Image 1 (cartoon, rainbow, N blue to C red):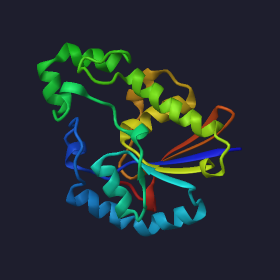
Image 2 (image 1 turned 90 degrees about the horizontal axis):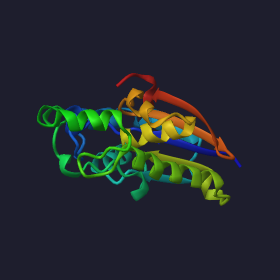
Image 3 (image 1 turned 120 degrees about the horizontal axis):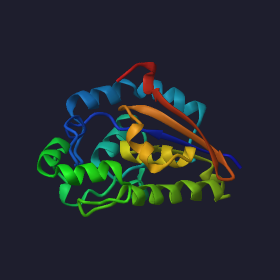
Image 4 (image 1 turned 90 degrees about the vertical axis):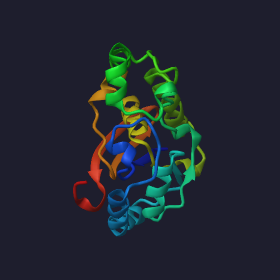
Length: 201
């Protein structure tokens, strides 16, 4: 059985704009963008109706799902990377205070200088989730739709194409874009970066 996973990145929030290691609600512009593409998204949804609809357990992903008219189930497995003591801070602030720690975090997937989750651990966690969908023969696992944090989308993409974890930093996930994975027997195909509504955000 082919499993199809459609990932939607959230609309903009203040934390995303600031590159802050934090959750938070969509800002006014992000909410307007999500609501503006809702009609176009309905067409996409009708063409490929999902059996299960999930969301990363964050405020911005929940609000994006609601703005798109999706009744999404928060899924702990799709949580963003745990950033430990860096949580709530901006990347530029941490880089100024702890340049060596940030350098290690950006170059070594096993490093977790913040005391949270390493990128390797993030990849393993999400890889297990994705592969479990691929071997689950229950009908409801055939098509999955999820509004997912950008780092979750990046990690799932890396796993799906069998790339080394370092590729994570070379993938740019724009707000309100679709990443599609289709797989069978542990092999996944990727289609990424398609904007909701056909425009750029």
